[in-house]
Image (tube, rainbow, N blue to C red):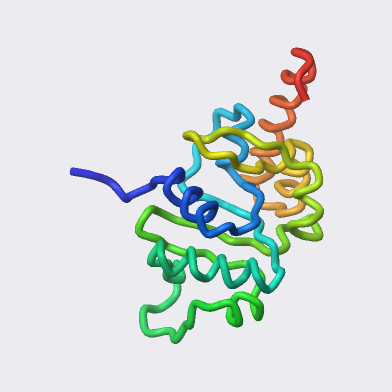
Length: 167
């Protein structure tokens, strides 16, 4: 018996191939930094520039994205115009859950997060990953119990990395 599909590298590869400007955030970003916490979705903060909205819509269509948790009969047109009218979207895709946030809690969005992001190799892909400080800030701003707990774990990780002389 197999569980739900979760292929984060495939999701990231599709976004990169479509030249979507994004920063990896959320639990997967924490894992890249060395967090022991488990995640079951890909979270990205995407650029809200018109060209990027068009590229994101194209990537989402290729991934077969549908709104997660929405009634099946809810009318939803996946295009740049719709993405421009919203800010945060939770999708189910053929490769697993993908959350696209234009302005994550505690931030001003992509440009701000991109400035401090670091490039990491993830399964042969070069991915911009949110800084640990920004990730902690977002978790605290979200305010949910699970995010506060994650912020505590990430803070301990940051201290460990600093002791080892790593950023």
